[in-house]
Each structure stands twice: as C-alpha cells, then as structure tokens.
Image (tube, rainbow, N blue to C red; front, side):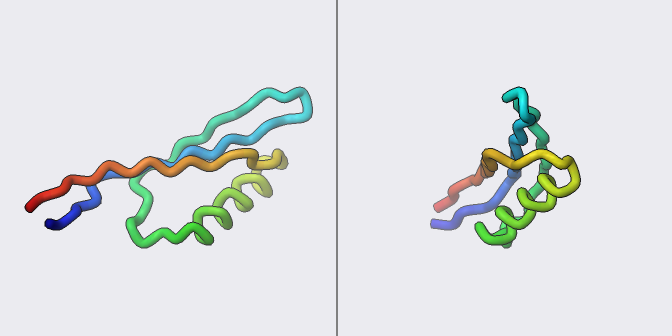
Length: 66
C-alpha cells in the first residue's frame, strides 16, 4: 500500500486585541514540512502582521493505492 500526497493547505489564525480573528491560507505545503518548520512559519506570520498567531491548522489530502 502506498500513500501519495495530493494537496495541502495551511491556515494560520491571528487574533487582535479586540478578539477579532483573521485567517490566512497557504496552499501546496511541502510534504517534507516538519512540525517545527510549520510552527516557525506561524511565528513569522505573527511577526509580519504584528498580531499573535493563535492557531495553525494543516490539512492534507492523500490518495492511498494498493
């Protein structure tokens, strides 16, 4: 059985002082992205926006073939 990485997206959520959330979506994340790299990316988004990153979600779509 083999698994093929088809597509992925990463959603970062930042929150301002008033509690308003802002979602940013990034597509075609590399299959070699580690948890550490994804967390570092969230920190970069926070630094660029000036708002803390409160959540990061990675969604992966794979195909499984026998």
